[in-house]
Length: 339
Ligand SMILES: NC(=O)c1ccc[n+]([C@@H]2O[C@H](COP(=O)([O-])OP(=O)(O)OC[C@H]3O[C@@H](n4cnc5c(N)ncnc54)[C@H](OP(=O)(O)O)[C@@H]3O)[C@@H](O)[C@H]2O)c1
Image 1 (cartoon, rainbow, N blue to C red):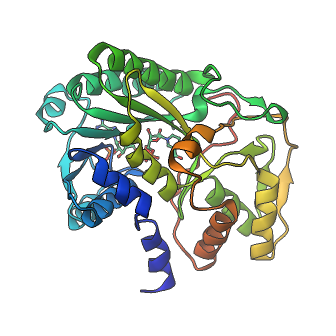
Image 2: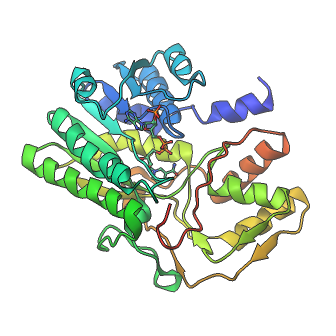
């Protein structure tokens, strides 16, 4: 296995904690929205953890598989049972099998401006349909730290005690998703975890990759959104599966991200050292940023295994060796919630 392959492979090696937890989860697991940027990683980790556990379980991966890029075949070759389904079709949704554990990963963000009605349908209406279909299951539903407003960096990041105050229709529709799920969790006694994620970092995608590419290509980096919280995608995916163990009624809301508030300037400077470049900046750091305090997740699952310096090292190595990237900007610099 060459270095490229071993870096990629490292994303799919389940931790002992995940293997132990998956052993304790009763029933099979179905991932709704499996073909996205995180779903494949999550499905493979769950399947491999289950293979190593005493009681093997079926892992289902469901999506429309709109991009014909071999994802469905890749998942099938791992032993994940894939199903093509458009969740917005009542008939197709109803035809899905009953499964004890659901991880719901569908969301619509980029292109919300101009498509607000569609964003609300996907982000707020559809979760109600899913909650109705899977009222007898445990549900972990992905959400976003965008439900919080920008906060003063000096005041510290908001934890779950902080009331959401969504800015812009994307964030508002995601808060709608949380509220609808919370309603159905109580109404139907469906145990749920709401998984409020801030910036998963993959080899090919995410805030770190974007900053690294800008430094490498000598492009300016806007510093106005001067701080962020990030987490290695593998760590986030493991926490999502392990969240099936902490579902509750009313729904258990958990912020998920890394432990530190990272300075964008500091990160760019570290990449500049790796690439022997001088970073170019525009703007100055605002004292307000979109942040999340994930200390509750760290208490439940332990700190994420991958440190910020390891993320920087791995991302640099990937890019310096010509690793490919997914051209889907995170727009983490957005300050008015217009995606
Ligand atoms: N990545 C991050 O850093 C991050 C940060 C905060 C929150 N989140 C949230 O976490 C979740 C997972 O993230 P992600 O980056 O993996 O999302 P993503 O790349 O947008 O993936 C969304 C998935 O949903 C599927 N989907 C969309 N509409 C569907 C429909 N009508 N029927 C069936 N499947 C449908 C898509 O596949 P098809 O098009 O093939 O159907 C895809 O598999 C999302 O809800 C996202 O908003 C992610």
